[in-house]
Amino acid sequence: MVVVTTLIYFLIYFVLGYIKGFANNPYDSSLRGIITNLWTFLPMLIVREYVRYYMINNCDQKRILSWTLFISLMFVAVDLNIYKFDTYFETSLTTLEFIIETLLPGIVTNLYLTYICYFAGYKTSVLYALLPQLALYVLPILPDTDWSVLSILNSAVPFFSYIYINYMINKMDKTLNHKEVKTVDLKGWLAMIAIVILMVCFGVGLFPIEPLVIASNSMAPKIYKGDIVIIQDKDVSEVKKGDIIRYKMDGYYVVHRVVMINEDEEGNRQFITKGDNNDDIDLYPVKEYQYAGTIKFDIPYLGYPTLILSKLLNTNVDDKVTVDKGRTP
Image (cartoon, rainbow, N blue to C red; front, side, top):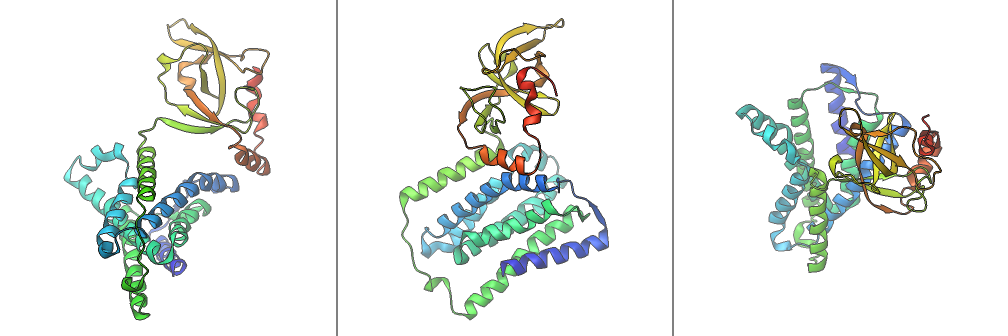
């Protein structure tokens, strides 16, 4: 039924496209772009829906409707961007747009996901949430519809799907009363709530850190190829000699150690960098505008799947790190 619901969604969506017109997809729809987007999106989606599944199936079954609403609203909050709150409520018009475009579709969709999580498991909710996103990544063009039409569509499809599924469940006499009542594991609940809190914090950017895969051994033995480093958004004025920094060079990132700090003619700081495993310093000083964070710590080997995938897609990762030896490509 979830697949049918998604097909109905896209049927209506593309019929609207023929009425309103089409526009180019802003996502990278190449094979590399699709896999990269999924690599970023899918793990978080699976974790999110498993947490939803665990919560709804380990709550007080006598208050299942209240818990369904609470869990759904919690995941609506996870999806909101805290930095846009000011723009949401600038005027009565922006508030109305926020409610219609974001809040109502979010509530309806999350209620539906929680509902199918309860009856069909988290894999079903992952499937429902994944298929529309997958289409966005794959298709080269998309319907050029305005936000109000999408809001109606994103609210109506899960709402009527819920009505139909609920009708079929009642018809087959599989009501909530016949579902096995499960006990609540306090430790499990605390773990799931902690995961949700972390998801919220990452989603709204409260943790000024991000991961980066290392593609060379220029920083060995401190950091090896295939490791993932965690980048901290540290102010450039706080960088000191000995720090390992990330900087941008011709469209890609380099991770090297600061061996000296100078000032240019205008009084701005510039960093002389070098890979621990290299004989020479990097060819050009790193300007302040190139600086993109300091390495907090690294996780060994976890980035190898990304490197292997890049090799398979012929992205020539190794050709992009020649700056590690102090040369530009």
